[in-house]
Length: 233
Image (cartoon, one colour):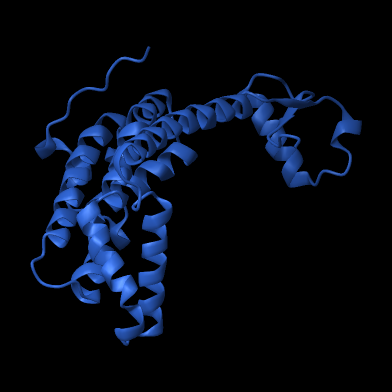
C-alpha cells in the first residue's frame, strides 16, 4: 500500500496560483504529485459553488445565464485536470500514479455532482424544450443540444435508487479503469525487443540504428543487443 501523500496547505500550492509562464503554460517545475490532491479539492469545491449559483439563479433560464454561464465555470478545475492528465500519460511516476488511483473515484464523484445536479439540469432541460422558440444562433443551438444530451446520457433523468446506483457504478468504474490503464502502462514500459545482429537491423535507417545503440547503452546491453522501443501489436 502506498504511503499517503503529504498534506499541502492551499496557500503553498503553486497549482492554485496564477500561472505566469509564457502563453499561460503550467508551472511544470512545481507540479509535484503531493500538490494535486489539495489543488483538486479546492478546484472541485469552487466549480460546485459556481454550478450551485447557476442553478439557484432566481431569473428564468436563458442561454446566457445557464448555458453560457455553464461553459465559463470550472476554469480552475479544468486547467488542473488537464495538467494532471498530461503528466499521467507523458511523465508519470509511482507517486503520481498513487495520486491518480486515489483521485479516480473522487473525480468521478465530482463529475456525478455536475451531471446529476437536478436543479441545474432542470434549467438546461427547460431551454432544450423551448429551443425552437428561442431563435438561437446555429452554434448556440448546437451547444444546447449537445450539453442536454451529455446530461441525459450521464444519468440526469434517473431518480431514486437508480440515480444512487448509477453514481456508485461510475465511481467504481473510474477506479477499475485507472488500475487497468496503469497495469497496461507497466506491462508496456517493461517490454524489451533485442536486436542482436545485422539480420535484425536489416532495413533500419542510420538514425534509428543510432537511437537503438543509445538505448542499449542506457540499459547496459552493449552495442550488439540494441533494444527497440516499438512494441509489436
